[in-house]
Length: 388
Ligand SMILES: [Zn+2]
Image (tube, rainbow, N blue to C red):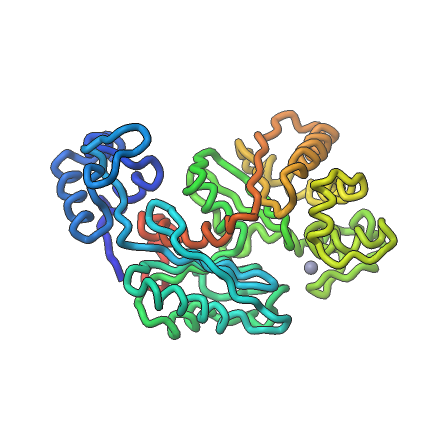
């Protein structure tokens, strides 16, 4: 496994956040001396992580021979496990996508052998160039990023340390980090979109969960389960006051009985009084501004608002972002409904709202970027160290 010292980690983290940079800029931003930076850049250069900008073709804003950039020697693997498919992504250290694909999952399939098949595909092409594996998994993951505590989509994984299973099947000794989807999405925002403010991210695709970043660090719960709001129970949920609609997890009154792909599908069928087969139909209808579809998405905000307002009041994030697999037009509906909720509740300091759309492998890319977090010395993953 690649082992870097603190200065090397600092240079990599800074280049990821602000690069390319000159040695002088690296000095002033890290606070390290010229000699240390020169030595660190040269070490990282010989190890194949970096190269000088002058060896590259002229870039948009002109050639700057003093600049240091990531080389394309190493890549990071990302896996996104969904209900019906496992997708994989390979990213260079400068976050460029070099390979992607997917394997289908049939209902009842154990996802671990499918994950291993995806990894094998990447490793057969890129072998030793892959320095890390990040996996985005739907469910509650232990705080050591290895064990699935609870997954409604894959109950056969409950209680299994799937990291150990995956590491055993891997031919290379590299970090394997498993996080839940919302954390991977937030990691994508942090690194690829470079959001630095305190932010609350709400992922409302098939399931519903949140992730929080305060002072540049993603907040992990003591057991790792923080942010899984989809299966929190609301007492007498509006629309399900008698608790007759069971959740997929077997309980009643979970948020997900009213919000997210599956519940939207059920409620859509009730509203339209006809069979609709796919959540995609609903997403398409939202895109076409069909009133009942807009009403469906809008009312979802009423259901998740109690949790959001609690988190907003408690942590006071500057930004509130959503990950959606809905068309972009839905963002206006959500913003309007949510602002109405905040106003009705007397909340005057509403965080700035934004959206990312899960149509470009955002979750899988965010998973791959977990490797970058590890490499650049994120204290949380560094603490886990050997376990990964
Ligand atoms: Zn549930």
